[in-house]
Image (tube, rainbow, N blue to C red; front, side):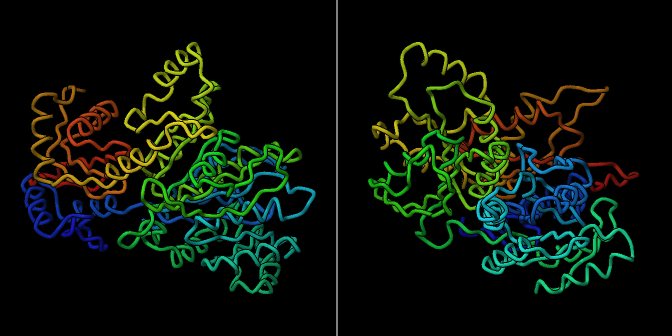
Amino acid sequence: MNDQIHSGDGHGELGDAEYAEFMELAAQEGFDAEDIEGALEEAGHGPLPVLAVVGRPNVGKSTLVNRILGRREAVVEDRPGVTRDRVTYEAEWAGRRFKVVDTGGWEQDVLGIDASVAAQAEFAIEAADAVVFVVDASVGATDTDEAVVKLLRRAGKPVVLCANKVDGPSGEADAAMLWSLGLGEPHPVSALHGRGTGDMLDEVLKVLPDAPAQTFGQGVGGPRRIALIGRPNVGKSSLLNKIAGEERVVVNELAGTTRDPVDERIELGGTTWTFVDTAGIRRRVHLTEGADYYASLRTAAALEKAEVAVILIDVSEPISVQDTRIITMAVEAGRALVLAYNKWDTLDEERRFYLEREIERDLVQTQWAPRVNISARTGRHMEKLVPAIETALAGWETRVPTGRLNSFLGELVASHPHPVRGGKQPRILFGTQAGTRPPRFVLFASGFLEAGYRRFIERRLREEFGFEGTPVQISVRVREKRGKGGKSGRR
């Protein structure tokens, strides 16, 4: 991979010679250079930059998120406390794509911001490349707002100050008062009506990087970053302590406060790893309504920092919707994946029988992930964890040369053509791997490829090239005829 280039020149991760060969192939099939470069640049980028939307409850964060997305995704109610399963969304503005993390959603607890607003903001800011700080201009800056400002200054991330609920010219003066926060110009916005949101998003794009600064695995021999994730009480703290060989994390189901996250450097299998600690999620008695949301936010933040997600599943209980949701989060984040089935020492034959059926039924979409059956309590099969992680990382970084990929695609199309639909049979013309970590493929086709056929392609790619332990992303560009020239249109 030494000849790969990672600059924003539209090549993705193709070397110069391979890129020239690929462009010649594309021209023969009637695709223009602009369309090809756009597809490669889009697919060649790694994870999208992350924008966190933070602020105290009831300032309109979820309404603003919906406005940014252009659709109703985040749950909006008149009261705080609504639990949301998903907190990260993909958005686009002025041709730029990015992720939005919504940190609104549950009631400020009676102990003040230390365990509510601050906790939400800290974990979201930790994973973000830039922040939109939302303040209710009609109320003005509160003590809670001032406390969030301190968090933002400590984090050192770029901040765009959104003065929300400015529904007309009369509210402009209220917005101007927010200069006092010391975060620069307040941008007057009405998230409800859309007023001023475009200007604010223009400012966001100025501070949001085209590609995020990678926080993992840089430098030769640097510790690889692993996130231990899973639903509460699945054994994350116990596993981290067992791996470390000492009590580094407090294991206590009744813990009343949430620790700040601490990344642990641990030697395992002769290699030093950085474990991104997610073991502090605790359910507060008076915050039970927001506990699942809080856990999702923490998981999302850990995934943004990690290269590999080791997902713990408690085999003593049936696989839950929350388990599958966490796996989906890791796959959508594009991280290498290992499934660790914990508490294996507690299994009897009957439970093992039903567990295998649950895995076949509920986890069929991630059969490619390495599996280890462990016990964090006894240390059973801990030695299998490192080989599984290394396998997943190898798959995550695998790259298929364009020539070899197109030979494979030619044989695939010849032996298993796309079904005829509406009298037409779409055909894959050629393709390339535009990126790794995770592997990202761009296929150029003569017509729309159905989702089932794309899944078939992914399955055959895995059979041919491996990709064990990694999501595989496939995007398709369709050639559109324009007159007799047969040039492609952008789609």
